[in-house]
Length: 187
Image (cartoon, rainbow, N blue to C red):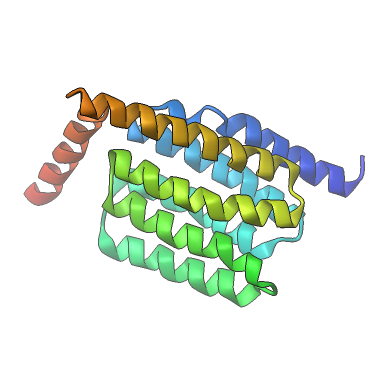
């Protein structure tokens, strides 16, 4: 097996890890699975020679795990600055700016939003990753991000329909976030 196909295989593994991510109603499980996916796809991008995307994805992984523990704005700013510095310093083509921008926007979303808003912002971020992955020729990356685009789009519609019927699909998660905020205020 050549190195190219090994790199593509890692992308396919990422595809398998990430395929069910958007079915989670729990933001916690969603973020845990997103972190695992991001780490694997980051390795794939680095193996494919796409350093800005690889660094963005690896930062995504770490950022997502940290966003489970804190919503601190300074932590968010640190990740945004790291993404911009590492991603922009290695970019050679304008299309390499897409994953960097997508990571900045999704970082903001994971620290400052929840529920349906997070998923809508992640959907827009995914559009940037799809364009980048097609340009790069990443088989697994194109498949997974294309799947994310479709699955997250359908789930956004499904969750919105539930809300319109008076059912909050994110009620349990909101209670967890409120409890985290209360604990932070008590400290």
